[in-house]
Amino acid sequence: MLLFYFIDELLGTQGVKYISTEESGDELTVKVEMPRSEHICPCCGTLTDQIHDYRNRTVNAGTLNHKHVTIIYRRRRYVCPECGKRFPEENGFVGRYQRMTKAVIANIINSLVDMVSFKHVATENRISTQTVMRTFSPVKFPRPKHLPEALGIDEFRGNANRVKYQLILTDLTSGKPIDILPNRYESTITRYFMQYSREERDKVKVFVSDMFREYDRIGKELFHNAIRVADPFHYTRLIIWAQENIRKREQKRLGKARQKYFKRSKNLLTKRFNELSPDNQQAVLRMLELSSDLSTAHYYKERLLGIRDIEDTDEMIKRLHEITDSMKYSGIYELEKCADSYYNWFPNIVNSLKCNYSNGFTEGCNNKIKVLKRIAFGFRNYDNFRSRILHSFS
Image 1: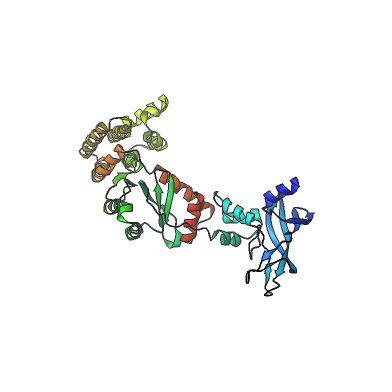
Image 2: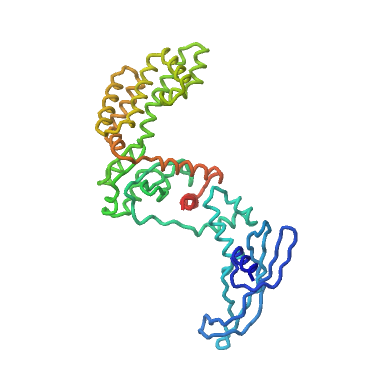
């Protein structure tokens, strides 16, 4: 009895009566039936246990001890003595018209939470890829009823429905994605958020995005109580890009030997100077001696990256203003262009210094989505793509 109990738990066949088993290689065939019991007629409600006939159903039951299990279910049909209605008996392990047990279907859906393809799940369960997709298709995720207090928004390259970018919305407070939108068009985003009442939209207190003007405009027009925050990664990389462009410019005017050294040492310039080893610090200093523009850009880069180390918020804002003004009048084109971007986004950058929210979690979600898309060799259908993404985070 104890053995049958564990078999029931593994195969999800609780309450069945085992008739026989047959093993052949990696195949295991189990013949089962349900105990005879009284059933209620679905037409007239009469209680009956009169048997009409038996029919065998072949059911996929998954794997057990590395063996594929097939259940031959001897299904019983009852007949009502009052109205003559014939109907099948009730069972708890396989649904109507199904060729797989409920446990196998649940295992398929649970397996798709992991970073695996439909084909991989199909191979493990010895079914077709189309069967896996058909099994997963009823899994739907409705639009969330409520908006989070801290809302993150960012696009990712999905290429679904012949659209280059899709959009992800995240709850930065709880660390969960809340929805996927089919594109990043302003009309689509506006129409989506307008489905929520003004009261619900006013609950959003922080709106975090990258430095994309349409996102900022949406945050301003739809979320009146929210402060708009520029993601620190996106405005920090502007000074990194400016320094890199200067390095490329200076590299071209040097000889071949120094050009090669500059190219191989570019990552040293990106890192914080005080985090480098003594040898790497000397290598950076030698590069900065060769170019005054590069030395100036590296100085501003270090000052901007060091702003986060300051504990006083007012001092951080004051330091940012000083650095931006100084870059604007540095006489170096790349730094002046970077300063212009900081001026345009100064309120949002200041808000990022005042609060602790960033789009780091959202960018992490994008990385996971890219892995999922690569494993699946892409998704053509947006609805399937959306369901798979939200299911993988559930």
